[in-house]
Image 1 (cartoon, one colour):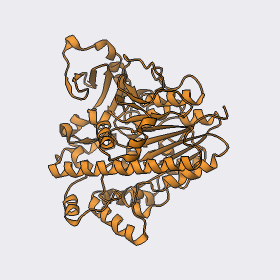
Image 2 (cartoon, helix red, strand yellow; image 1 turned 90 degrees about the vertical axis):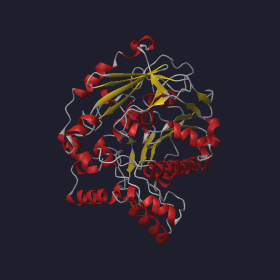
Image 3 (cartoon, one colour; image 1 turned 180 degrees about the vertical axis):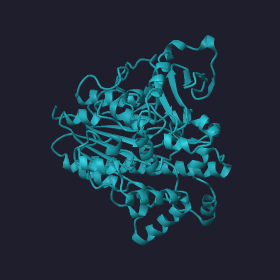
Image 4 (cartoon, helix red, strand yellow; image 1 turned 135 degrees about the vertical axis):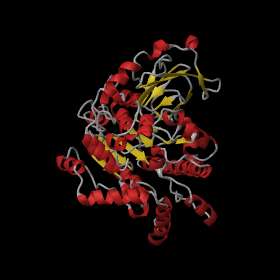
Length: 488
């Protein structure tokens, strides 16, 4: 490892979709990222490998698609001991590795903290009652701790009761919002962010790695539903009462019991955009910590998302169950170290994926020449192939969730689908064998039906075998129970 090896900071803005992110940056809603834009290589055609947290993060950390790493509903929503993770690769090269995640899924029980010297993650209390959570739910994880794994895989009755209580409370988001507002005034802890401890812990991690380079992962969760109206801003009583009347119970949309009303959509989009402004401010603070410690200029910074979010498009809300553009398309910005001559600016051409992030980091740090999927490439390469195919998976619902859905609704949503993107085309292949073909319109965003004569089917020939490999994996019952216990 060279003495000038770059530091690496990987920031996931959970649930942030590409189009609204770009619009919000351009409109001034994210002033820090707007000001730092010239320092980044920015990809307009980035695709998430999966439609929800665990499989997408597993792809981010391994450079592999979900059918290879197996961390999805149909194969068990846990990353196993193989393949190698990015944290393991960098730690073997002398990097200090740490994970600071507001999303409680990035923890040992899911395998997503494998390779981190230190891992901290949030939990239910700070997701809903932010004002009460000034420290991470788990104080620390140093290396592989078998006792911690066992405790998390078999939660106690007390923790199960707490999760149940929080799930019940989550149905009344106005109550959570009011408690956060009042509590914030009492303890002088406003604004109350999800994972408010992250900035402090990252700064401590920078100081702890003074004699060697670091690899830090950060997950910021404000853009994930349900949306509290307390996201660092005041709100009038009339507006708050309107907000309080909207429904944010995702299970209602999953079951098909409720279609989003205009008020539901208006408030969800409004609070979603406000949450992105909060995220922008938090990334600014992270950058300030690096600058204060003299580590900013030599840091490779990746700012991205694990998947997007739907707000009524096609009748869908939130994420996980579909492969619409609002869910699959994500922002992906890369700030190379100052010594890297890679040209900055927007790259409009090739399709890229989160599976490329690991290859990018490995190439930039000199940690090896190969990482992840054979098709993955360094995003800083100037010759990314324009004819490559990138993929996204939706894996339906867990066995536990499927068992309580009405039969008709279960047939509609408990379906494995894979989307492929290549050139101007997108295809979605369903587990029943049905294929949906699209072509991007002149704007680059609008999807229109693609006729056989203009559709390059050769670019998507591998989707069917990938789909079969996912469907052939039996889902462990214990995984279904664990996911249900976490409230997903």
